[in-house]
Image (cartoon, rainbow, N blue to C red; front, side, top):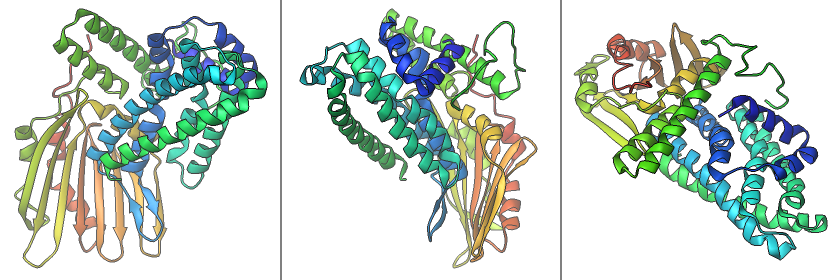
Amino acid sequence: MDLNKLLERAKAILLTPRTEWPVIEKEPTTTADLYRNYVVVLAAIPAVFGFIKGSLIGIQVPLLGMMRVGVGAGLAGMVVHYALNLVQVYLIALIVDNLAPTFSGQRSMPQALKLSAYAFTAAWVAALAQILPWIGPLVGLLGAAYSIYLFYLGIPVMMKCPPERAGAYTAVTVIVAIVLSLLIGLLVGGLTGGTGGMTSPQVGSSNVQFDKSSPMGKLEAWSKQVDAASKKMEDAQKSGDAAKESEAVGAMIGTALGSGGKVDALAPDRLKPFVPNSLGGLPRTSMSVERNAAMGMQIAEAQATFASSGGPSLDLQITDTGSAKGLLALAGWAAPQGEKETATGFSKTYKDGDRVVTEEWENSGHGAYAVIVGERFTVKVSGNAKSIDDLKRAANEIDLSGLEGLKDVGVASTD
């Protein structure tokens, strides 16, 4: 994967589509190369930033307050959303290819796939704005509209249809795309319950280097890791060994999610000791600890309730994000920090050393305190209390340092 080429292509298709489509039309490419070098990166934006918004930042629901999807469910939804986005690009290409004769165009699946992939660029890039309050949905809508315009400009070039029929061709395809998007939303919702114009410097150039700890340095390292993981997956597929292929898929997903490779989540017996017998002076009344796997990615979660008879109660949730731990590292510098107060309470996000903390409080006496530990684990205490400080003290009764000490357990070597 050449990250510089990816950025230049995205810039060109967004800013100068009329001249870029003829260039794209003449480029030889394969489905694997198109996905590996472009689609797998940009198609991840809506899923990743949707997770950040829905599970880490939260969604303000009118009259109801701030809503967050649980980290476990949010991660599962993110993986499914990402996979379905990849599938959607190919399905739309199939439809475009089959509709070509109807609109006096020429069938060509490679050209249809390029049309589908590059036209989605605006919508994918606009999804970065999901984390912005109020303006985020508007930017997303504008991105979708611009993707339709890109598609309209590209159809006559890529599918050789008469320009006067491009409008109808686009309209039919857009209707199908809307239906597919709705289906994706329903599938993800059912599971969870819930910048253009970049110019040089050239990322990856021998003349320009970014500090490895900087966001751009991490992005450059990530692109190299994804490229290496994709090659290993191709080799595993060619070998015909189902076990190797499954392991390679898990490593590829882990790398794409920023963890550097496959990460085995803690086994239940390793996570269970972090759930105390009492919390905030309340005895434990129930507990469950489990580890689940999907698409080569593991997530472990411990849940417990602490309550007194007829009195207050607290809920504890400890999550090991496994191969998706890279997202929590991203949250360490991407999640906005700030505070919001209303007539009924407040919410704020801030950094406490290397940890990201979120506090929510309702004046009725209910709140939640959540902290990201070791860029891998999340610990959340919620329930009724006298103040947010009580919930914070309860969370600090958990052995957070001990949990942080396990951040490298199960991390596969990238050598």
